[in-house]
Length: 129
Image (cartoon, rainbow, N blue to C red; front, side):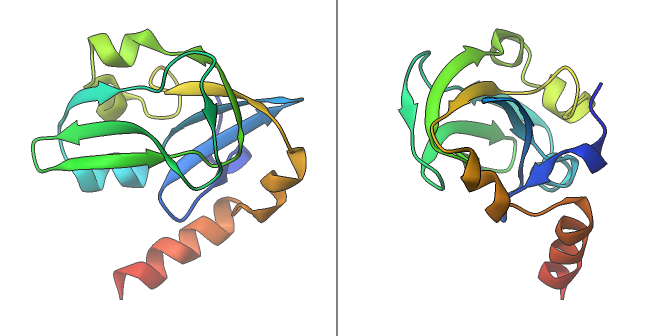
């Protein structure tokens, strides 16, 4: 199970864990708490090309629907079908069982623009004020 401190984060609350040229993407623990009970997940299509900071998936909670943004550009390589079958997994295990998809990175340098755990915690605090 990846640790929150090992991932990088976006201002739209996605986490990304890069291993070589492939990255796993999910929703941060903070995001799932804010959304409430998640009831529906629409993932991108396999082999779909996604662009950094553009919507590529949708998560619906009892409160509202939320776009999921690609943290980096690339091609979707793997989908986690478990979250479409059981969206509540995101509430239970956002960093482990409930990753959303994997991307083959088109530009590994894009990862440098993302926040580390410490910067993300600071970002959440600032947003709360």
